[in-house]
Amino acid sequence: MDFHKDLIAEYDREAAKTRKMLEAIPDDADLNFKPHPKSMSLGRLAGHVTDMTGHWPLTVLNQDKLEFAADHKWDPYIPASKAALLEKFDRELPAGREALAAASPEKWDQRWQFIFGGQTFIDAPRHQVFREMVISHLVHHRAQLGVYLRLLGAKIPGAYGPSADEM
Image 1 (cartoon, helix red, strand yellow):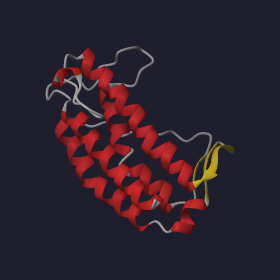
Image 2 (cartoon, rainbow, N blue to C red):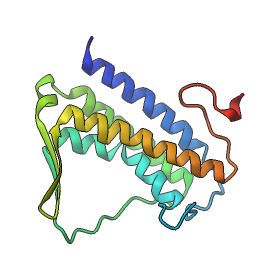
Image 3 (cartoon, rainbow, N blue to C red):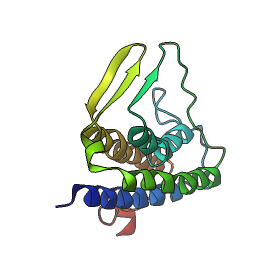
Image 4 (tube, rainbow, N blue to C red):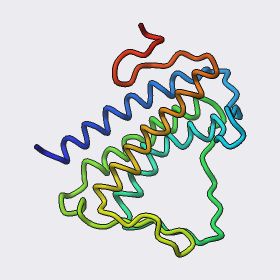
């Protein structure tokens, strides 16, 4: 089994499923919609999903750690429109895939860290971080996006077989 080849194939499959979900956002959807006061807005969640195929793979694969000061204020990407969201996804996806394809076998066992305010939240082998914080994180938030779309009355595309809307 070729771990690297399999991981690239999985990334490609999950990215394609993600694009289908992003396409399912209604053109006229209110990107400020929240299903609950503690939830992210639709725009912020959809923007975060795009980060899982663009910004996050590059960070995990090209840096040894991500470190922020305790007073760091995250400025999340929130698209102005569905068209802007899809443009960002399409523009950034190839760089994430290229970084994944270029990763050397020895790189996978190197440790990667996420440190915030001096506290280490992640300190794990890069292969584990990539699986959990890129791919699994993408799938998790894509599923949340599906709930938002269902609440908005949009049709949900199938990810691992046909959805109820495709039957």
